[in-house]
Length: 475
Image (spheres, rainbow, N blue to C red):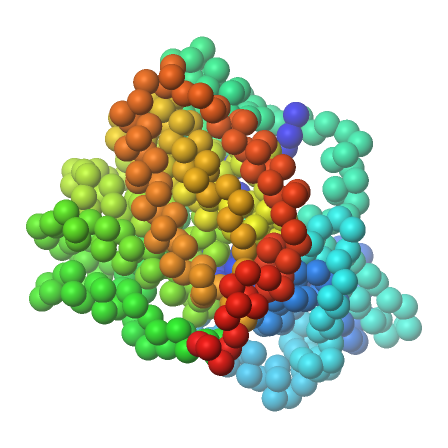
């Protein structure tokens, strides 16, 4: 039996632009500091170097991997750091060639020398990074981590341990695959969200669950709000212009609001024409991923690169489908989305470096489709069918970011994933689940097989596809 994967593992709050290349390395740096402290050698460190391998090296600069590592080593947390302070912190490190380790004491740190980009791959995962601490007594302490997607970070020995022994999940309803989840809903006569809620209660109080779910939603809403009200050019050198601002202005016109919630209330009062539905959904998704591309705070859902799909579809439900929906439906939506994401993680991958973009946009679209189907009144079987339909039409999607940046084609792909999720939910709602020909578990297995067959140059290396067809000069 696999480990318990919580909804809050699948929906994390962090900083863009990438969960595997930014948030993961940031968390790895934090964990490395914790190791140094637990080994009681933290105060004896006088230098640190970091080696990046594989995809982290090939597209790390475009994903701000080096910046994330410096922020992590500085003792800053991605959930709480003031976004506007990031450039100042990085600027000081580069100017002084020093870093305040763990926000405790200063050591030399040469940005261009102490983070080393190695193009070769480590055997366990495409996203490897190795920290080396040089101690005052001449010894070294080395620790290697793997950023496996969605902000998850593991160590080599942990991977080996999982191969050797089964780890029992303490959930009352341990779920390995979609088939098991469906059987629980039948035997317990519960919705998928209700099964998930019972599992979460084995780890947290109801107050904590409800509070954290709403914190995730409020972060999503604020992210959309910021994206819709920010204009200009995204950083990175591609000169990609923000589009959510202009699209939002054209849709909302003259409106009176002063906060994300009052803005949402204002949109709900707006009469939305049929053609504008697609525009609103696209606007919401663009907004999130433009914030993500600018190193803003987003919710990995299940990754940063696909962070716009789930909030865009949830906003669609609140703005278009059900103006009376509130906290109950929002929490229900997020719990279903998180559970579907965890099943994909267990059966395949949510890392583009391992599976291409099908593992990010495809999984997020499946998560959103499933969640929308439940809040729209679909049965558990129809919820799983919606997830299957959404993934079925993302199979084989490559990850080929131009310039190694999560901008082209990544930002637009979130709009497509959101639209496909809504379409998949509608198809599932109009279908008798008994007539389903392809179960979700089969599609997940197919996705994983496709990932294994996919050429490595299409797995977030910027060595194939659009990444080489389009160069910086074209942009």
